[in-house]
Length: 235
Image (cartoon, rainbow, N blue to C red; front, side, top):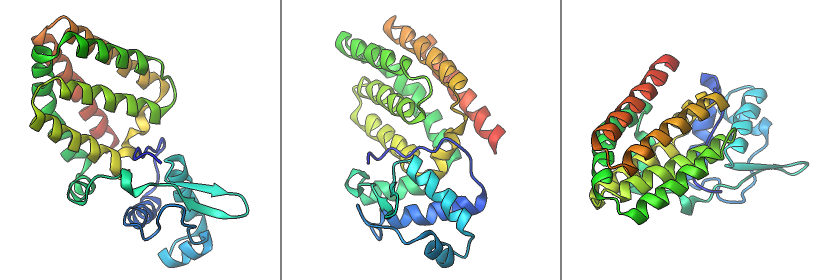
């Protein structure tokens, strides 16, 4: 699988615990690529939960492309550990809470956008425009939308001409990508919400393309504020 892990619906606390434990075993390669997972009955017994709880956790993992169910054969790991970050970065990413992630974004993104407006060359602006067109073509696929978001933010980070800032932001992206707890927060990405985000990103691109530093920075601050509101509303 890619290292993208997206769940499109919320789960209960017990299911989340099972998810965390199973995913930790998969990431550590206790259950490596193509390994058949224990049966639902065995997992339920091992974790002291009901079989339907395990089944719901497996449903989410399959939605996230972490495992693949084969009728009559069982559930097999499709997560490729080599796609994961190096151990040091992985440790930081896995320990980052959703709130910590928002705080870091609030620190990095305004300055990142400011530098990108100043430093992006015409070719990079054109490439960013192509990514904006790509994300506008996504309407319901949450995983595809988040992947497009990553590409947009990476392109903006590259445009800063500050490799350290870009590296820091890549780690922030990794934190949002590898943590099931964080990606489960993406459940608010309904088709309506996706459309709203597309409109925001289009406004951001227009500000970058017109070299309007003040408007671009103000936009990203407002966008972050809206994401913070969603986070606190859901928590």
